[in-house]
Image (cartoon, rainbow, N blue to C red; front, side, top):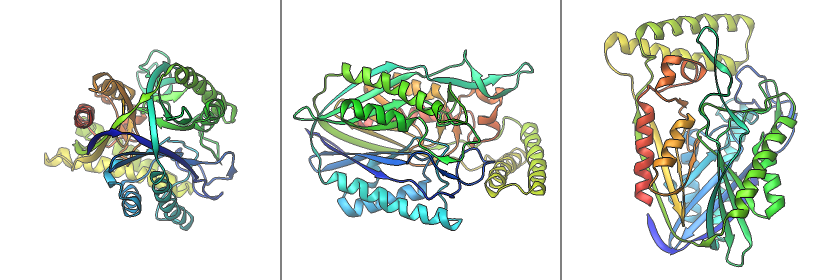
Length: 431
């Protein structure tokens, strides 16, 4: 889908705060939420050009499962004719939001409610777009840090690695109505939504909330935060108190505002969208011995946790790890590769800007490589979009080990290059 007519746009926002007491997601060992610190929001940018329509929806959620994405996109298509493949649901990956599932009852009710809220938000915004001007700029902010810390014995743990790779690009798309009225600010950065640490049990958007608040109060545009490739990026500030999230968000907002003021938007034409599916090789843990060792470890942990009466979220988390390890061991024994992991890649170009996206927790090196090689100079990379496929590390991380590989990964080392190639192919289709 592509057209060269005048670009139009509109923004909308909906409150998606869940009820207090709902299960939290992220940091599997926590109990349910005990209160709300700040509300969660979904912010939609609806785009139009002639008969073509697309949308980018920024959600204060850890992720959305592919099945629910399809349900919401189908509803949007029914209501306003937008192609289901032209909607990006980009999640901020806050670890202080709800578990979205078909059980227990409160999670199921929230899931159903969210489907209709997001569908209505996009359809309403798509019906009132106006001609716009667009510009893109880039800055740099150091509130993130590589989190793969090497220990004296050579093992990798979640921590702080000041010498490790970081992506500190702050990319801002400035969208204005014809009269110069600020309409939307897209802010793209790479930093895990974990400022409040693993013990915090109040519902919160984490740092994207204060970032949006500062940007919106300063320029009058509605701000959308697009989480980047942040699989190995954590915030520098992590503490069980809100000022860590506030400080991170305010500092990021300061750089975003500096970039915003440097942009001179121009009359925008053209809207193009493309999607494709790639199959990523399933994880085998490099050898049968490594897979079997992890399987033994996790079976023992599962037994111990059940004896301790661990919460269901933690039990499910360990059981999923065991399933992956069993599949890897079987693969080494039979010589047959386990079924591949499908990943849907999407790209949308609007005027001079493009967003390319993938599901999953993607290492920063991958996002940087896609942006560097993109045929469209002003490319934003969004992870955690339209699904959840776990971590996508760079190949060298597999020998190093660490949480991202041994606990939360589903793909083999070849996945990174396949993902990069898929993103570049999607961008070629929309350039």
